[in-house]
Image: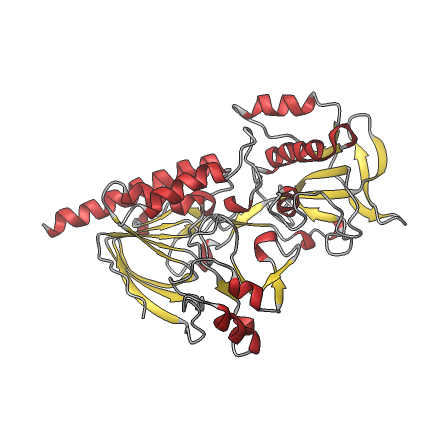
Length: 427
């Protein structure tokens, strides 16, 4: 049975991505007790799935490594992975929370030696790489995973493969009798930082994401470019494994559209500008990128980054909302539309098309097990009627990493104020 120490002076942080980690660390480093709950088997969220940040083009390990070091060194933070909040009752200063814990089948004895992964034969979709490849059913989610502990997929429990994993472990770390459990804990304030999910590209029917293998999303392209990704960092076409040297990036794929996402997701333009660097780094002058756009959103310090990409002769900009994608006989996706600068029709073939899909909240306001206000897109809004629950990061709006961290810090400060009032009232 999992034991968690939590009182009305505890701050519960729901979501262990960059926003949740930031909120937990900021609160704990002021002396508050924090319980950090994450539904994945590891912390880091979608940030750890990035290859590089914009505009500095540095790797996420830079910031995440520091945060993980701070987190490991802070005894005030209790981390629960494979955990989901299923119920919230009570009010500001006195919440009662139910948390469902899924079995990991691997305990804290694990040294991440990898012997269990070598022993099993079953392969499953690689969720960390957006299902672009397969992994063994006993796996370490990523090299940056925290906790640095293997996971056994429930699909092999009760099969000979699970027994092989157990037999291969020298540290008595595999527990095939692990069971789902639900625990209850108290909290004075809650920071809801469940992050975002990419918009389902298959809903944009005219782009053929589910019909044409060489049409992928921006998050999938990010994993292709990463040396730790499914292709070892090689930008290859899914259909035939050939190098994709001529890449199209379609902006606002589903965003700013009453039929899909009404809002602008803010990060997509900068994400595509960043990804043109990946193409050039992979192929030099032979790598060509075309950005189809309505407007380019590059504000503040990002303007310089945008201008550098504009000046690159290997990157072309076409001011157009691509009307539809077709496919030619060679399997090349073909972008069809009208360039509004001159109103010229085009039907341009590319090796690969990348849809810059927008972000929507992973858990929309209506799905949170508490009464909270949310906007028409499902993002959490400040709620005076339930003033002990605070949204953070992309649970509140479409934000990049930098602004998510700022949002999380603000949410942590508000939560600290609540538990401080509880502490004073109890004196």
